[in-house]
Length: 140
Ligand SMILES: [Zn+2]
Image 1 (spheres, rainbow, N blue to C red):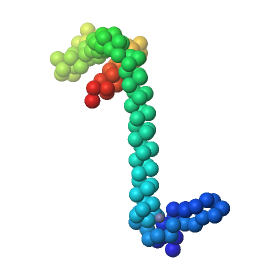
Image 2: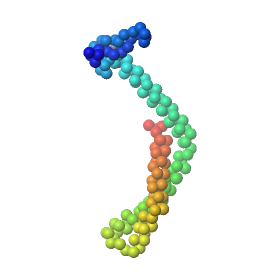
Image 3: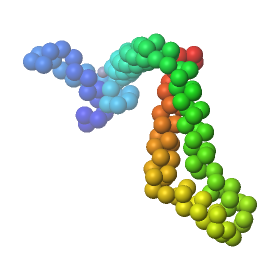
Image 4: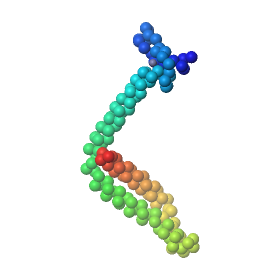
């Protein structure tokens, strides 16, 4: 059974043979399983290093933007709160009854243009928070 013996190829394509030793894991013997694990570990490490370098370069390029991003985030969150809070607050205040002024307020909150802006703000806030978290990534 091929599953019971190590599939690792030893030698060249033209002149070689499978290891054939008893299988430890992943159809490999103890020795070739350890080699495969070490190789995978090196690949993961080098990929991680590459990722770290890219992140470090990104942080270096963007560190100076952090104050502007924080200001933008604050502004976006304020606008988001203003555009979304009246419906919630008014509903809580009147317990379902609909005063005409509330109906008007809800209409404006639920107007397409406002909803579109709220969706846009959610995207902006998400991106800014993501970027600011990415900048902090270097500290950990
Ligand atoms: Zn082997």
